Amino acid sequence: MVYHIASTTAPVNIATLKYWGKRDKALNLPTNSSISVTLSQEDLRTLTSAATGPELKQDKLWLNGKEESLESERTQQCLKGLRKLRKELEDKDSNLPKFSNWGLHIVSENNFPTAAGLASSAAGFAALVVAIARLYQLPQSMSELSEIARQGSGSACRSLFGGYVAWEMGEKEDGSDSKAVEISPLEHWPQMKAAILVVNASKKDTPSTSGMQLTVKTSELFQERVKNVVPQRFTHMKEAIEHKNWPKFAELTMKDSNSFHATCLDSYPPIFYMNDTSKKIIKLCHAINEFYGKTVVAYTFDAGPNAVLYYLQENEAKLFAFIYKLFDKVPGWETKFSNQDLQEFLSVYEKDVSGKLPFELDDEVQNGVSRVILTQVGPGPLSTKESLIDENTGLPK
Ligand SMILES: Nc1ncnc2c1ncn2[C@@H]1O[C@H](COP(=O)(O)OP(=O)(O)OP(=O)(O)O)[C@@H](O)[C@H]1O
Ligand SMILES: C[C@@](O)(CCOP(=O)(O)OP(=O)(O)O)CC(=O)O
Figure 1 (tube, helix red, strand yellow):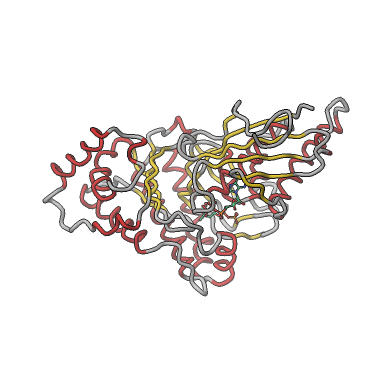
Figure 2 (cartoon, protein in one colour; figure 1 turned 180 degrees about the vertical axis):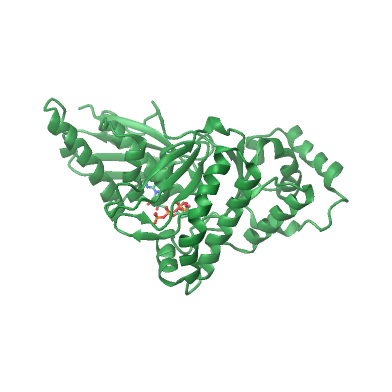
């Protein structure tokens, strides 16, 4: 028999205004709105294929070549939501095959480390929802589908759009107004780039879900953050994106990363996501901006020690004079630059920086970084002809 199959890729997004805290755990409703930049799928992406057929009795998932359980409440919520929408179509048109009664086979691959604080769950749930929505030929918009992806993992709802994205927290108890919307498409500000310094690619200590629950329950600072800090920052950051106001965008991004990590530290017992290397990178970014007398780089850290450095294309040589000088031994540079380009960064350092620095560069920081991922703002989920499922067997290829 031949199976019905649809495939999609989906991107990672890195928040510049952080989601941290749930007001409803079952529906995954946040305590504040958030904003993110979607990153290019050339560098970080999930590819997911979904298949169905009358002979499939059970739902199954294979992730990075291994069969994984689909039992988690969150995945079940996503599958339930998608089947409900398909059922509505089938009820209206009796000619449609009864996909909603059949099992699903889902096969997915991340081209980067899973559960390493690189937002794999965001790309993973976004791809899962979009692949099945396409298989089911659902008419819903990306914003509507984002309500389902949100229930898989909050940050996943933002991966349904490219460019600059907001997750509006909403007010309704049923969560029907808590969804992702596009602030600006990638074409509006395509000069935005990101250098990710992978500080520790092993599994993290405190998962985001339990970490944020603890913060909501125990941190007083958190109350101040959601009531007074984030609502204003949300408006200001949206404006900064709309006006391509880089210094403002950068300042708010850094402040919000710091504010989020401060609420983690204020949780009881405290949660530490950043390590000494992360802190050295923060100091370095401020020192770089001070050295040039303008904002060249903005850092942000999620629930782990990895640093995401946002910068504009026009400032690349200025930033890389420092970071290539410091991190030239770690892999990743060669994916985007020739040897000659990289030597150029060192000559900028020798010509413009060396001897003029009011501080010593700390070579030690290199030891805490294992890899650099060079990327930029990118598009939302993309349909693909590439399939991970064999159309004759319905099993992973
Ligand atoms: N391609 C995928 N398809 C379905 N589920 C996935 C996929 N990739 C990751 N996941 C789910 O997401 C989990 C990892 O989420 P977790 O939040 O621990 O890490 P992360 O997303 O890399 O980090 P963070 O969200 O803090 O940036 C995996 O264990 C898996 O359940
Ligand atoms: C620090 C963050 O990356 C937290 C992400 O949390 P998740 O979306 O992973 O949490 P769950 O909804 O419980 O799955 C900030 C952000 O991406 O906005």
